[in-house]
Amino acid sequence: MSAVPTSTWVRRGVRAVHQLIDRDGDGEVSDDVEDGARAARERLEPVARVGYAISGVLHVLIGVLAVRLALGVRQGSADQGGALAAVAGTPGGQVLLWAASAALAALAVWHLVDGALELRWRQLGDGAKDVAKGLVYGAVVVTAATYASGGETDAEDTSDDVTEQLMENLLGTLAVGAAGLAVLGVGVYHVVKGVRRRFRDDLRLPEGPGRVAVDVAGVLGYTAKGLALGVVGVLFVAAAATNDPREAGGLDAALRALLELPAGPGVLVVVGVGFAAYGVYAAVRARLGHL
Image 1 (cartoon, rainbow, N blue to C red):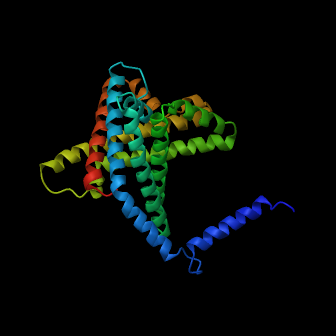
Image 2 (cartoon, helix red, strand yellow; image 1 turned 30 degrees about the horizontal axis):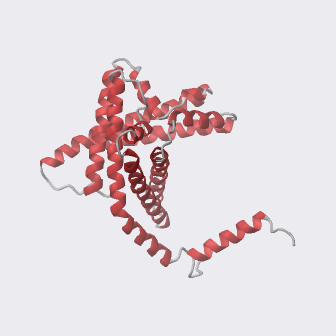
Image 3 (tube, rainbow, N blue to C red; image 1 turned 180 degrees about the vertical axis):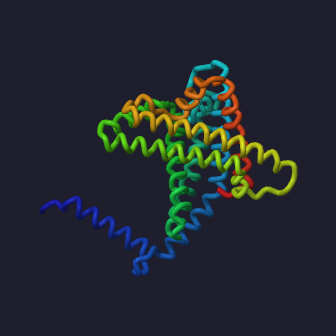
């Protein structure tokens, strides 16, 4: 009996998935599937909000690590890996990280489902943004689960390895440069959102003195995070322009690059405080905001 070609299995799989989501046979995604996605999103939202609060805690820890770096403490990395390692090193830290992984996974799935629905509704910009957020939170889940299971990971080494492999040919080098420009654009978006206080649209805040505090946290947080992301983007663009993968780096490399600027320690302290402020804002948004 001859073996069935792989392409045939792929076609059968695609056909089966299409039949599953197109039960009406009209070439469109079935209303049942869309209703199911809506229901799943609603069920996930409470846990996803916990995940958003945990993201806020991680930002506060990154802020603390950035300030420590500015004050001369060079141990560990000032990024999500460093923050997760700090949690893992506390009593009961690994149990906390497993719980955090579950909540962050719910947040990742929530964004992916929400993005899929938005793409279905032809809201391409919002859909792409939510899918990207889902993938980012998914990566955080993998890192958190690694530390929860007793392992560790180095984001900078991973970034260097991937960049080096990509830059073995011209197309890969162009991709690294494009990725850098994209991250730079995200950084600019964060700064603009913070300075113009557009983050208010994400919240359901009552009037009162607390609104001023959230405004301050949002402006500082989005601006600081945008600056850090902008530096990450510049590092990748520089790597592509010089054809040197060692120039690329993640958040830890970006913060260390800020440290080398004139008055670098002061700049890094402000950025660290900004990351902590973003964490406070994220905690408020977890309770009172739109995810």
